Length: 76
Image (tube, rainbow, N blue to C red):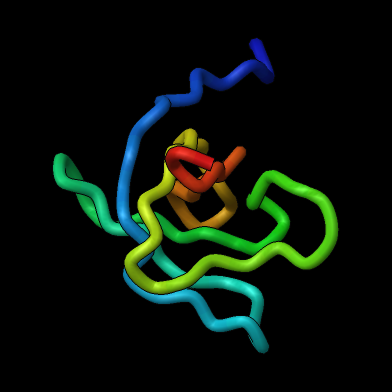
């Protein structure tokens, strides 16, 4: 068995993100919303997202289903 998982690269828009809880959801045009945890946001320092931010990310299988990984703010 391989522990390797295929990641799917997609684009979406932040639906909401709760800074105090450190998580939120990203909406996609071609599928269901995806859970995002602050640890999946690329960058140094304080990592957060704002509602409406366009983002690029990978979808990986988390413990409770699909979730975002390697989240980058689009165009930045």
